[in-house]
Image (spheres, each protein chain N blue to C red):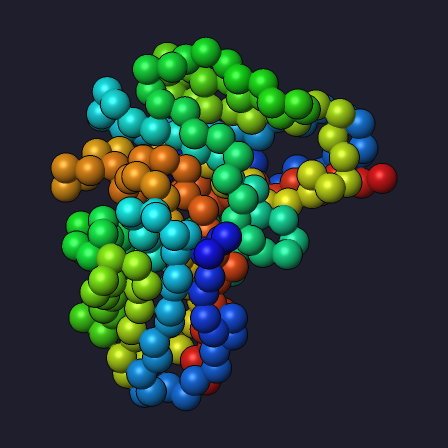
Length: 113
Length: 117
């Protein structure tokens, strides 16, 4: 597609539920990244992929968070047993290669109530 | 210690004024990359510039210019003749080699720029 597409745009979920956030990168972009941005803060790295391989997951806060990109294109970030502190904007980005400028998607605003 | 420090939390200027946004970074690598992103009120993150550590030449793009000084670990961003549409949060970011690659960006806290008519 023309840009990085994320769905849903908004997600409200009850504490304890699992959520899956989807990212569809720009066609042909090798690298895909997930970031989390709290209100008034800069984006914080979660994880990234080159093709289908997860290269770095050091930013995932705990084992409730996981991500996959099984065919090297669309990626899913899953949060299990959500907690209120998980509420944030989750942003996906893609790039042609790892140190090029990223193109960010519009993000998914997650609210855990 | 913060790897990327944007000391100015908020800046307010009047249209047509010049404004400089400061960014200071910290790294032990000799090869690294620096970025600036703009986040307008609509919320998206817009890529502005990428600079590698070996290129200290200043860059100008229209009303935007960037001053990279390795000696002071700074990568400052200047907007000349600011306009209301420049109102946004601006983020500076650093990419270092970690786990063998440069994939991860470390962002600063951002500077909120408000340009008044």
